[in-house]
Amino acid sequence: MSVELPFAPVDGIIRRNAGELRVSADAAEELARRIQAHGAELAIDAAERATEDDRKTLMASDFGVEQVISREGLTLPVAPIDRIARLRIDDRYRVGVDARIALADILEDYADNVASAAATLARHADRRTVQAEDIETYFALFE
Image (cartoon, rainbow, N blue to C red; front, side, top):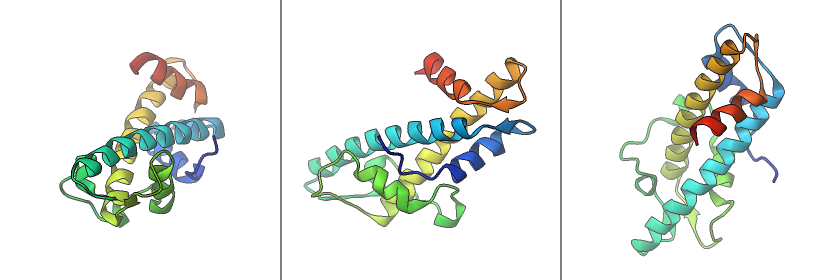
């Protein structure tokens, strides 16, 4: 599976949660993969909600978001989030602009939680670098 999300913004999310720790490129790549998989799953659920409402366009409310934040408040870029949303849903669906921003916000919160826990795991292992194994360990423990 190719990763739609650029690693640089994901690296930035890990860094803002890691404090003084370094971040390996493998950690950013692993988290980007996890974000993409999670986003694709959320889009499947949102598409089902849109279908129930007899719509072909996904809206922010399909992702459980009532108030959409400003695009400028996001670290994750919206264009790759749109591609992630479309990965596993039928081509007949469209993803509205508010839905893209809502999904980006959800995925950024998700990434912050994982990155914070991964940083804690790296510190616990007495390392100075957040590594892919910290991301993997988080998912092994909590999902």
